[in-house]
Image (cartoon, rainbow, N blue to C red; front, side):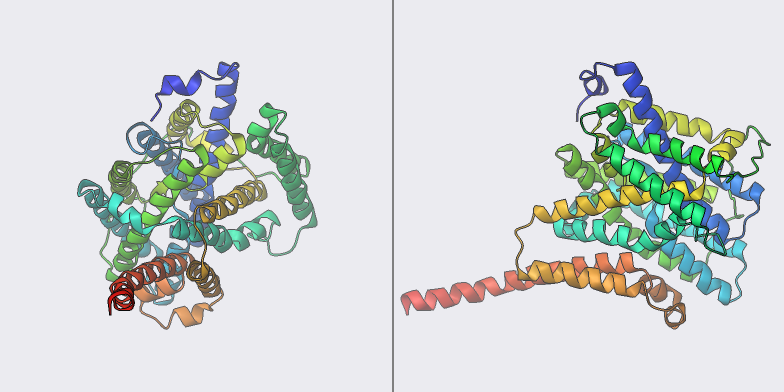
Length: 452
């Protein structure tokens, strides 16, 4: 892995370029740290004060563990943010348990204990050096399925957010047109490869321009600067409580999340053309385990290396770790200044969703790059097609059907991302096993033809 000093030698405009790259990474960390917590805050009907505290705690841990991972874990510029897989899991868990009459605080307390259990599991996997071995299950085929199904599973939410349909009760043409114009603008400047300064910072430029555009259109939010300063807190929902249904769901999802660790690292390695050893996965898993224990104690959503980070590098063409490290430190500082967190969290939601939509386009492209690493045959095409179709089909199942199952089963059956990953892993391993079993028979037939 290159040293930090070597990361910097190539840039003629080191200082300015590093600052702008740092700002772009910081904004990406901010966006990834905001979307899911804001959705959870809306789901749990948190007050403005509670949402502010929830966000500032999330910002602190996102910066802290992004910094720890890039220095001591995988040593790659990968954002450690709220894992998208928890979005669906928490949503379904909340819906099922709310209809069973469970209070929202008890659900939150159950999730706290679930995240702590996942943290212990991930740390144990890293200590026992099993993460690197399990990563072998996530082949280029499985990674490609993952990189396609994740954007597909969230595309509806992102598109509704772009058009202003996520929180609005009626369609607003101004929001829709502004988002589409911003989308076209960012795509256009990101393709200006001859003007590297503009294409490298297309996301940052787009966010600033989008924010200004929506301010001119009159989309303003009341910003509360009090309290200006605060420390990260523990037990946001209260003391962790044992709920076997929630604990089972989070623990099972913890195994699936190893796919996130593997895909995030391998997608960044693919984009940056780096070689990754199995020890990298074990180191990452140990640090992720520690982060889950601490975020579980804090009450915020569990963090994992985000695959969308490779989209940022793919768009900007900048792999240097130094701007990422500086951005992580800035993110940690933001966690202490709730007043500043409130200002930054006032970025209009359509702008956030538009930028994330563009990042997810890059994820789809990376997914197809994974498939380019495979010599396609009929079996592999079947696995890809069946896994994607099944995973996408699950997304359209009505909630009433999901509620027929036990909460443990329902949370898995109702999550298209989980279903697609499990399906692709099981099918690929089944085909590989049947192939190995078939080899002795094939060899015996050749022996008979030749010698008998």
